[in-house]
Length: 311
Image (cartoon, rainbow, N blue to C red; front, side, top):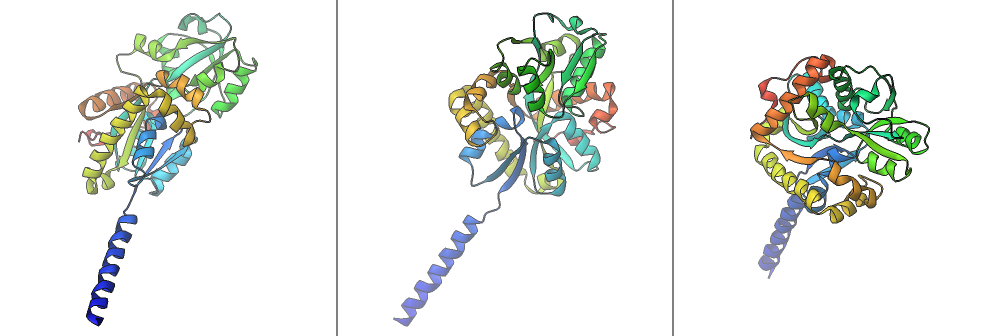
């Protein structure tokens, strides 16, 4: 009888140990910006919560600090920030996917702006100083030979409020802020789609967001990263193809406040999952344009070939 009880106890302890190991399995930590850069991750968060801990932030500095500090293994960031981090961390960064194409639009309170040349002499209010939006706008102004004054606001919400109130006549915002702002002022209209304007002056595809991972982490977890990319591709397709359901999840997880605005903005967010050689081509071309326009925008130097993880 004592022997039987001992066997039962040992078995129970072993089972508890096994369950404990399963319950405490290491999750991959992911940090992403709210908005299009993070919206494509929503099904990953919903469907694979046991494998990933995904946190969303509205501040790029929070993502940078989390990634540099080692709290985040993977990060969804603006394309230029990926290169800045590669240079800052002495090459210990790999880009594994392009996840967002062009999301910038010029909003106008009025009907005056019909083409890019019409911006001559105007004051443009914008957000994203020090990040991809600033460099995209600078490049477009330069390539079109347009002289305009650009005044930057620190937060999308600040500029959105000014546009909605009619206090600002012309402003550049990304989706989903564009859709949210236009619901508050019926006189606002999209005067220019900057993705279309970019295509007129550049052969490079307009890339705005990407997914990065630490190089040393990738070396130790290649299978897990490959699996994550499969799931991210599935999630990005889900968001684009199931807008109603995706919008509800986007609200539920705090990526956006209202599902109705998410639903309206998703078709204009250009959420993608581009990997492999296609990713390398798109990202490298975009970074080249940014580097030639302003070397500081990519951290002072172009990343080496090792930066692009083909898989």
